[in-house]
Length: 232
Length: 123
Image 1 (tube, rainbow over the protein chains, first blue to last red):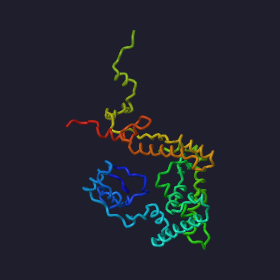
Image 2: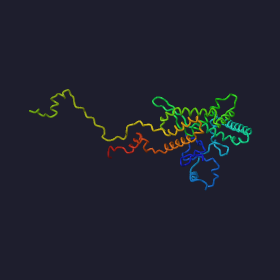
Image 3: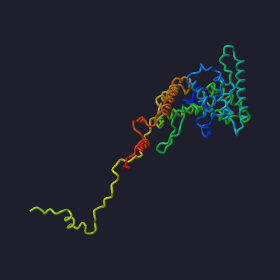
Image 4: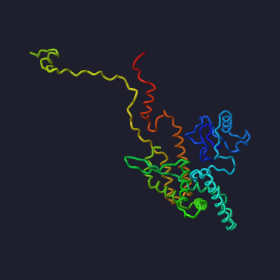
């Protein structure tokens, strides 16, 4: 389920982020997050686990927040892709960002299909053609495992290696990809083409974004002596 | 013949100690002879950083494998588990339990003392 359950923990398996903003929210805290996935409603009552049964009973008595227009119950919507599109968006031009994203996915699919049809028979299974799978795997490969934070001790600021939260890792991966595509391209290449190129490279664990991640890891490794400065 | 034992005021008077209006120091009332409801602010010692061993193991693995993530997947998983456990423990920490070193910080002690203040008068 996409929201934090009433017991206070949120399942981290599928969903990267909340639906509603946390700060400046005008809803009463008793309001629950809306459940958008259709499969959960189609399950008969007997198949639900104890937690899900409790959740259903809670929903019968508590009010529910309105679902924002950015989430949808269609099979084609993906919260990570929406987040990436939002990060690519400039000046609120969601139409352009979304079209760029779909052109990127199309470009990935075209490139992979070309490779598929050119490859010999035994290698055809190894080629991944699903652009969504490639996107997710590429993002996962780009996520840093450990980060650096500035901690001041005795007047001097040190770069201390620090574990990162899941949200921060995802954000950094997406940010690096977008900055890389915006800055290091020829002025005549289009964004979808450059993005698809970067995503395919990241999928194969190569390319400038992966290099940036390795640089961060190397710096963390060099500064591992300062790890004791952390207090959490 | 022993020196005659005069009272103390006589000795003082004769010595001229009080001639120039030198008086004994006035006794200011002492502070209330009871414990205060606050303790002094003490700088809290920094708690230890968590998961350092797992991190160093992971970094050693990285050094050997040229910072690839695939061969180090086991160490990375262990590190993530440790971090998740430490995070959960931080969240579930009750505010009134002792810290890892076995002492309460001064702010918490003041709160506790404020709940049971010293009785200064009986009404």
